[in-house]
Image (tube, rainbow, N blue to C red):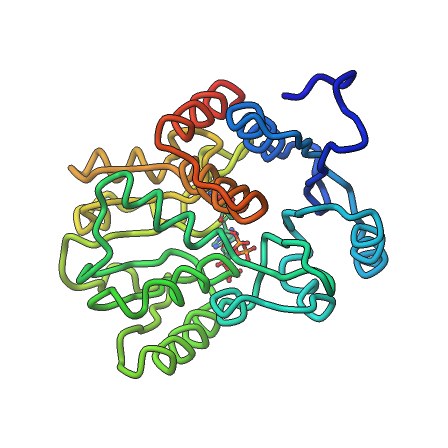
Amino acid sequence: MKHKTEINGLTKTCGLIGNPVEHTLSPVIHNTLAELTNSDLVYLPFLVEPAHLEEALRGARALHIRGLNVTVPHKEKILPYLTEVDALAAKIGAVNTLVETEGGYRGYNTDMPGLCRAMADDGIQVEGARVLILGAGGVARAVAVMFCEKASEITILNRTEEKASAIAEEVNGYAGRQVAKAMALSRCGELEGEDYLAVQATSLGMYPRVQETLIDDGDFYKKIGIGYDLIYNPAETRFMRLVKAAGGKAFNGLKMLLYQGIIAYELWNRCEITKEQAAVVYQKLSEKL
Ligand code: NAP
């Protein structure tokens, strides 16, 4: 990280806007990348309350903040204040990265490309996979949108079935085929087939409520070949343990976090981060957790 006394009038500023921001790991990612790429850049978290979102963006623009990450609760609400939105972000309906342009900010979604890069890194194939998504919140929806063209089928399993049905209907429209279907949590025992690529996209099991998981039944996990939990704290969730106990492979969401940050950094600095640099940042993130 750039030493505070080395900051000068040429130093570029990037940051994160969200609420809360106290526990964010994004400064670790970006300040480490700045150091590794010899960039004169600092990255800071900014607490922005929902009522001040538009003002905050206008202020950032006036201050020539080069790039911003956007986190909860602003990922969707910020869309109307942007001058441009990248096609994938528009389809997903949420942005997590802003790049300063002449007229304002252009919004991107690097969460989903980040997940794809993380999965590729872990040797996971989405092409032709039978995908199971646990949850039907904002991230589950984004995963369904991202995978709907590549997966052979997608089942969206959620406590509130209507939310899963709405996503399935929408992505079937995008894919132009009946690729997705909804399933109520109460019917999870009826899931047919095996060797699912299961993406855990609920908040259950996240620190400090580490004993929670959407489904407890050990038999259910026998149908999962790969379990990908988007949670990264704890490093091994209860969901991951249940997948492994049933003979499957399990991964956490730390690499997704890493790569969404790396893709944002690449957009801000028009550069390419190497695998070796990514590995250094991953190590730092693991140590922080
Ligand atoms: P969200 O919109 O709040 O959705 C939460 C989902 O969890 C909903 O489907 C909800 O079901 C379900 N849920 C919550 N509590 C439940 C309970 N007690 N019983 C059953 N279902 C419950 O959240 P999100 O923004 O999509 O985020 C989902 C997860 O993704 C979070 O855990 C977050 O940590 C993770 N994430 C990871 C990364 C990364 O970089 N690795 C990035 C972003 C997000 P209902 O619809 O029935 O309420």
